[in-house]
Length: 219
Length: 313
Image 1 (cartoon, rainbow over the protein chains, first blue to last red):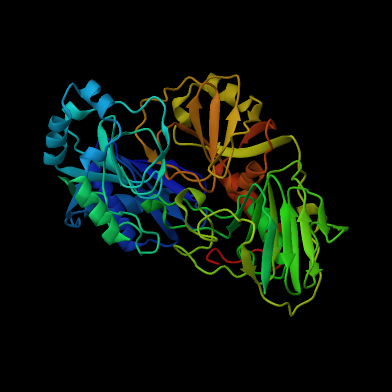
Image 2: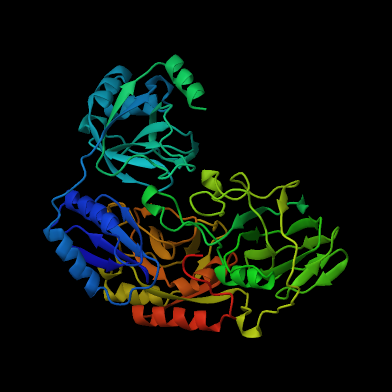
């Protein structure tokens, strides 16, 4: 594991040869549970985490030692949950591009996308954005050349080798293949997102009628 | 009895310390862009340092007070009038019921702070009153402050007039040096390239906003911007986005980014970066982590008692 400074109050931990992505994720969970002194947050990405503190840290050797020690007994990782997310694929906005890039028909893409099992890789870069890994290679699709100014909330998209969901309306360049009525981000709840990195996701196709019914029930 | 917004500014929001601890959910910290000026405004108004206040950007606006109160105005210079009379910034100002405050266009800086004694915002979201406009939460209904908005405030008991010590009133203008430390990808640059960047005079791009301050230069950087795995970022991180362009991530910035993180503007200079006007000339001065922390402590020691506050607030 490699440590880098991310300013006065944060340290970046990156997986190296001895540490795998799953270990990085386990590490972030253990740090959150143990809450070392002055801990503010742990931000988890694919192969790195940032540990942020509420005061400046000049010397990181103590932290390095702490991380090496918890790495040694990082056997207890939380059981991931399986979450099913309904999606109306018919409401996707970029089917022409997706069919062109993948060489597959819409129904084939839907079949492959909804049969796969995904893993929550990270949350962010904006509130409620969910990056999923595990997209079948046949569905890899480059991002849009000109990003949308506002991708609607609930959009399910493909961006490069990943699939993911926009929980809040935000600018974005992913190819949108469907809309989900599920609200995965709620600023009024604690925590605001019910998912965690490592959780398993599968998508269940629903009709447009079902989508509207679920939207009306949610609000 | 409230403060009524008679004419809105282009982009004004309610801000406080922000919401640290939610970045793991993708939620930016938000909060005052220039917390140096913001906490001094609160001090003038007799508030705790990170009490929610009005962060005014670009143009000023018109505000009417429906009862007596105490206010403080700091930050980017602007002509301020109470009714017809011009008033000074950086000094406590008492207001009477019916008074109309007019704030002119901001000059030489991007953010002005209007603190009102005992300003009351109805609802905290994720531990903060700060507005995060892209997510439509916080502040007043998650949006910018608009005509007709009514914000209540408390009556003043302590009438003491305070004024910001001269040495704490920043110089606003078109030139600025920012202190930086090394970012995680800095070491991937060749020594010659590092030297070139440190000697570059950058210009601020008008596209800058609460998410980030964009810097332009003629010096392209010898580092790939396509191969990096997305990785965490914090406010102050300077990303290289290609073609000589850099972004200083700020309070509403994303939590994870895919561009090389070459530098980090020190926390004690982040407010200076926030105030950079379009086309300002920016030079950078690389210092050690120890110096960054020492400078931060030194800055804290300059504040009058009652403006420092605990880290929790």
